[in-house]
Picture 1 (cartoon, helix red, strand yellow):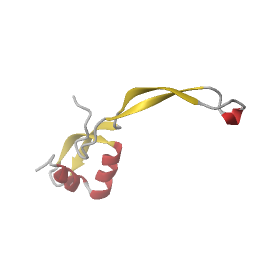
Picture 2: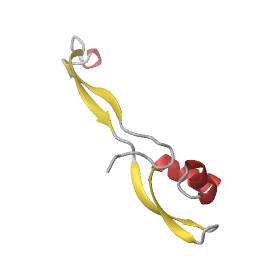
Picture 3: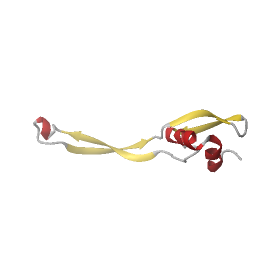
Picture 4: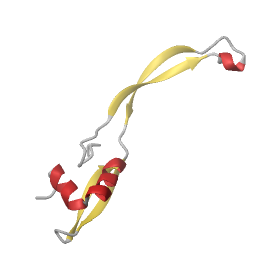
Length: 88
């Protein structure tokens, strides 16, 4: 099961975790130094949710990000899901 939002199409992003060594100048040291960059992924905040669509008179299950759920609340379930191609 892929981690992709059904509404916005948001998926995992690639990035780095930065390893630092040393004591910060603010704390009396000689400063922080970057010693390595390790690859990592940033996962979207996905939720599996049953959304009531009054125009269809039924629930539709979607896997959506928290931002997409806010979009459903603001624009309405039917118009948002129709624009995403989930309902006909």
